[in-house]
Length: 109
Image (cartoon, rainbow, N blue to C red; front, top):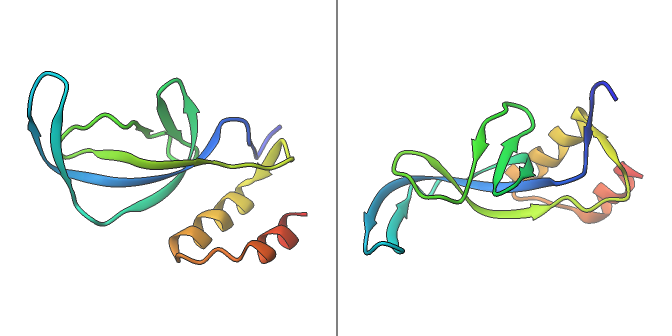
């Protein structure tokens, strides 16, 4: 369907920039984040997330100077598709740290 976004495997991801990384041993590392998180809507494919607007690939693997997924939540809805307008509304609500569930339920029904 043209112009619609499938909700299958659709996630809201919280991203932050890795500013420093130190390898402790073969399996562990210690890293520092920039502390300026941002949010994106992304499709989960295997262990990666692909931004639905930009096509940028994100993961939870740590590399200095790259963004890392620090949290993800699936979009749960009975709808199979949403419009880009609804996707933008979701991101705007999250970015402003304001999520009025009643307003969103009324708006999306």
